[in-house]
Structures are given as structure tokens and as C-alpha cells.
Length: 495
Image (tube, rainbow, N blue to C red; front, side, top):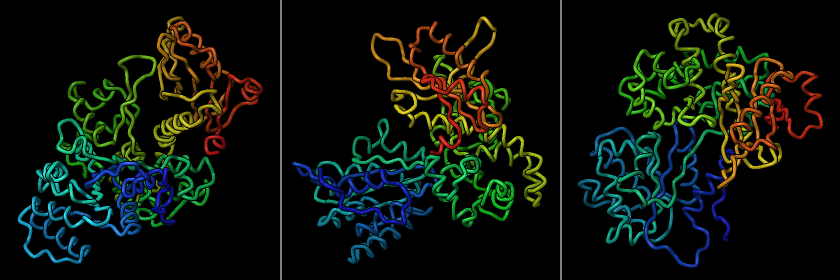
């Protein structure tokens, strides 16, 4: 395999895999057979994740063209695109483009000598004014199209997840045309702590529970303000997140408003508020909102398509699922800010924060810590569970004898093997605000016993306690030397 020829700029933090994907698309590794013609790549991801920053860096590193569309009419968009194309090629377009048919054909012919990226950012803006644009690109990339004689590496990028997701799905014109499908995700929790330069793991969890791994919130939305220590955390929340003069204050509202498929913001905010309050099942959300279950199916589907909500199946009960808000800032807004919005707008952040801090710990940090522990389990693999998990999630185990249910916060399952019982690698309990003791281990042992009776292979299942506030001496002693018991504290989580 050849080496990638495009070096990632030092100013681009992390994003190693993403850069490798982009570099490999622009300058493919050595092949025995050259692939002629222009190629298509699609880059998507929620807003504020650094897509434009990454693609601008790619254009600079390769002498490619970067064009950022704006909300404009078709005529103005064509004019702006023509100007950008003229600046890049240094060739004046003698006859103005009548429409995108002319523009796309000319564009591909202009890129015939050198394989460089041709980046159309905020592509959904162009599609909104010119719905036929994906079909035009498809035609020009096909047999007889202008893309056949081009070596352009066309990259379409956008943040409207429902639009970008639809470009390559079903019967969409561009389906099967893309040689690159790259999703830009938020930084994972360890990378986010490094990016924010937070070394205290407890403080890292608290900060991540509000701003998550979204890169833009580090500088653009907080002016580089980072809590100096745990003692500074409350003050940081007041002066940045709850400060009406800071961009972060209204960001959660804008994230929802920017999604074109969301027609009734009040309903969607109520659905999100239900999830943020712990009503995460379909029935629970419906009861909270005051609608029938079938009436919230569409809003939940839209929120999933927008990558704001994720449906997480119960690993032990087929057909059961819970919904989780993907963006931590939205959870924080719905659980904390929205209920006290009038007071926050008149700069009463300190009073509000004192009143809601316990709610923050219970409804925001606690569930968020569970999600971080599931991320840890996904990476832990062989080192903790003696095998690589194929599926990570949560599940509920009925306990008929005690007329109760055991909620298992972190379940790690091995890959299903035909003709054999499903093997459980680990069952985990998560506690953020209390010291974990021997009784927590007992609950997991009971769940393991019940699952064994249901036909699961639990012989090597590791009982894992994830503690945000530490472990009792009795529990520590029980885990010492027992390969089927693991304790994961904050230091290990971020280690």
C-alpha cells in the first residue's frame, strides 16, 4: 500500500482517521488499475463539528477549491459559484451560466489536468434553491457526462442531516456514486478532555455533560473560557453557559431551529424535554407530551434523522427501546435552562444555578455518565472483559421471584455464534453520585443468574462497577484478585 501524500496540518486537532479518509480520496493509494473520471465524496455531520475547518485545511494542503454556499436564490448562488470558479481557475467564464446544467458541466471540464478536491460546502443550501442539482451531478458523473474526462474529486458537504442522509439513500440520484462517505462526529470523551485541556477526570465529566465533544464550543462559543478546577466549575457555568451575552446561551435553541424538517418546534421541544426528564420510552414520552404514542412516532423519526436523538434497543427485551438525546447541550437546555428561561434572560444565572444544581447532577450528569461508561466498555475489549464486544448497550432483566426488575446500565455482548447461546462479556452498574458497595455487586450477580436461566452464556461474564464517587473498602476487597469482577473509577475511565 502506498503512503498518503497529504500531511495533516498541525492546527487540525485529532481527526486522524477523518484526514486519512479525505487524503485517500483525493490521492488514492497505489492501485494496479487506474480509475478514470471524476469521483464523488460526501461529508456530513451535525453543525459545529469542524467540517468546514477540516475541508478548508484539505483545500489549502492540496491547492484545491473550496466554495461555501449561502442561503440565496439560484441566480445568486450561480453568480457566487462562477466568481469562485473564476478565482480558482483564473479563467473568465465568457458566457454566464444559464443554470446548474451549464455550471456543473463547465466545472468538471475545468478540472481535467490534476486530481484536486473541489469542495461544495453547505450543499443543502444549493439544493433548497435548486432541487434538481443532485440529478445534474449524477448525470455528469455517468456515462457520457463531463465527469468522464475530468479528474476532479468532488466533495459535497452539509450539516442538514436529513438532506445529506437522503443524498445516497433509496432511489436518490447519487446513490451508488460516492467513493467516500465520511461522517464527522463530535470528539469522543477522552479526546474532548484533551481538547479542552481538562486534566481532572471529574471535572472532565461535568464539562462534557454540558458541551460534549463539539469543537466549536471550546473557542468560538466560550471565548476560550475553561473552568480552572472543580471549584471553578459552578462559576464557569454561570459566566458562560447561563450568560445571555454568550453565544452558547441560545445555541441549543438554534440547533433545533436550523433543521428544516422540524415544522412544529413546540412539539419537538416537548419531546426532547420528556427524554431529558427521564421519560425515555415511547409511552413515557407520549404521556409527558400529552399525545398518543402513534402521534410522536414521526417527531422521534425526524429527530433521529437529524442526529439529535438516538434509539437504543433494550438488549434483553426484543422490541423494547429507550431514546437518548445525542447532543449534551440540548439535554442541559431542556432539563435546566428551558424551565427557568425568563429568569436567565434577566441575568439571574447565579440564583437559578443554585436552585437547579441538584437537578443537573441527577438528570444530566448521571445519565451522561452512564453513556460515557458504555463508550468505555466499547473500547475496553480484551483488557477488561477478555473479549471484544460486538454490541454495547443497556437492558432490563425481569426478576419474577422478587417481583422486580434489574436495570443493567452497561451490557457487553460477544458476537452471536450460530447454534450457540449468546455470550455475555460483562454486566455493569453505574453510579455517579454515591459510593458503590457490595450490594451493587450483588444486584449484578443476581442479573447474571437470571440471564443464565434464560439461556445466555454467562460463564465468563465480568461484573463491572462503574463509580463516579469511588468504591467501598468491602467492594474493593471483593474485587481484588477476582477476574470476574472489575471496578472502573474516573481515573480508569480517562486513563
